[in-house]
View 1 (cartoon, rainbow, N blue to C red):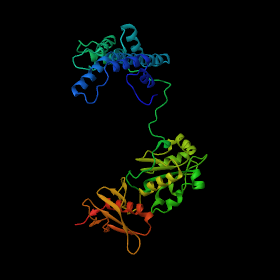
View 2 (view 1 turned 45 degrees about the vertical axis):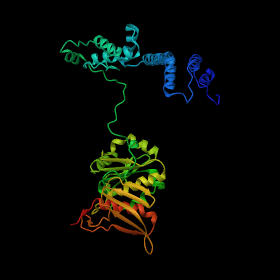
View 3 (view 1 turned 60 degrees about the vertical axis):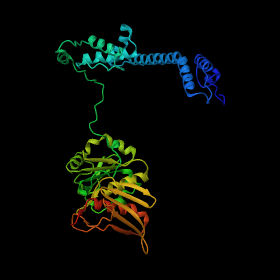
View 4 (view 1 turned 90 degrees about the vertical axis):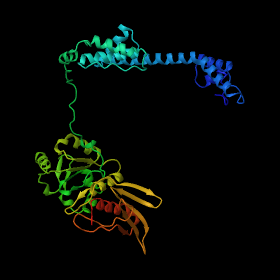
Length: 412
């Protein structure tokens, strides 16, 4: 490829991928109608550009025709391969029939197949709209012909009713696998802070045997820090014994999967979380019907660090007796002044260092000022300013404040 481009040189066009015949035509047009100098009158320069465009019109039309020809060949070849591979779509055969019998191009043949399919299925005729108003469209002709060949009679007012009555539904494919009516545990999403808070006695936690043995994610340690977690249902997915309760309060006998299923479905759970590796998830998928259908079904995934973060989100949604806080997704932003989060009409932000030590966090309402005059549903007054000792705990503290304020009542 040359450093400078001369449009009057066919070699420059060929170096940029043009075939020889196109390159010669382009170079010839530029030689006959080169650009005028910049100091030439504007009208003269525009006239010269129009002359060159007119000279290149036959080439551009030939390129468009060749592109259309290649598209038609590729599309018909694809349909032929589909038919050869045993496709059951009747429209593929109708496309080839329209080409071989009626001599239609691709657009008309495709429209023919659509019209033929509509007539056989008992649908009303819906021919395609023309590309340009007032111009003949061979797609409309192809659709009409296909509709007639399929048994459609547009002049009969009872045509649609007659064909709908005669149309028979396709026979079911016996080799088709049964459809899954519920998502498998391995397909459940990762925990987020979007679902609503749930009381701990309506929460179910299923741990894989590997997590119970080595504690890679640290589930037990984090769980013990949450008040009210004792009321949650805790089960382990054993290597051979299936699901088994990890505490006597679950009401199921270890090893008895029928009793376990009965206990799970009678537990009135609204929230399920599974923490297991891929092999254990596969075993749980095989017996997924043992788990009840609940409003929120989630599983941890990816690296251990991500699973810990996901489990903390799940823990934060647990509601102990007497707790009142709002759910929903907190929108975080990191500005020059520090971290800030927003939930509903409230914004919590880092307000700088405190005196003599610590870090200030404040909460503002929709007015842009401090959120004064709010209390919890139990009557405890909320304070819009908090001082923490460790800045690394700012996000956790801001989360607690936002959820309390979003569920609060305004006094006065």
